[in-house]
Image (cartoon, helix red, strand yellow):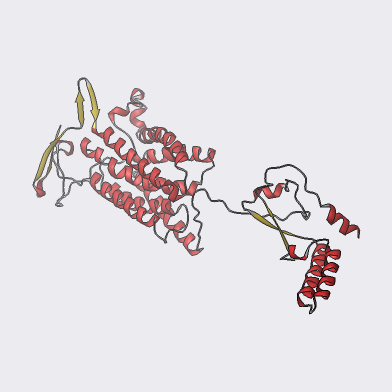
Length: 382
């Protein structure tokens, strides 16, 4: 139980950091973290397709990411408090006593989620965009767990919103949890609106913006906190150094990609169409197609014909023009017969002398070899 006060605002109230159900203690910290996670997942599922990710595959990443995120959050904390935990190894797994680092959770969740994404052949940059907004939602809500535990606060302050309680030794301090919560929720709104605008040019852009947005905030707020983790034997705050690095890296990448006018936005389910030319011309299809055509996602394909056939078709077209320009019915009949003798095809059957179309859907999955027609063989022999 804590008696929390905001003296200059005239606010004061009592909070309990847990709910007691018989002999079972349920901590508000865990409840709030769970609520933040659920809302982040719901956002991701609702916006996955728009951001270029399969909702079903995203859920697989979330399930694994939650597990690896908890492991990462604890491992990060223990690593930078090793002087204590090396002497109290029985406390390493005592997560219920506190000691989860947000950066460790993010790193752990990314490792687990990206492994699943790689296995499922997902678009990694698009997945990171979804994760970026989800992280901000989860962090913005989850920070209120620190409020109920009266932890993660800052140095003494005379500001209007200074907070004090038994947890702060009844000294008015910076409510760092509040700073980060407001900043993260505002960032989630900004990134969401940006994701729906024309300013979004490529997958991964939201992730880079997250790095800058959160990195800048954490760099400032971490400098105010009194419970920071330090690099052993130095006075450097781990999370502050990491935040500076992420913010700078994000800014550099955003500027580089902007200078190159990089654009790569494709909705989920779309595929780039790559058409390969056949090594041998196709004159007819017996329910088969060259293996190269299996990479073509189209209903029809234009095939280039050899020079001999092109010349033959050109003769046919010239003859057709003569038919159309002839003045007497008798001459029309004579010329038409001559055309059919040359081409062995009715003059009405051709429209384009350079291309021949066939339906790719009727042949795409068969294995029969493609062979020239008897008519074409006969023409070549002539």
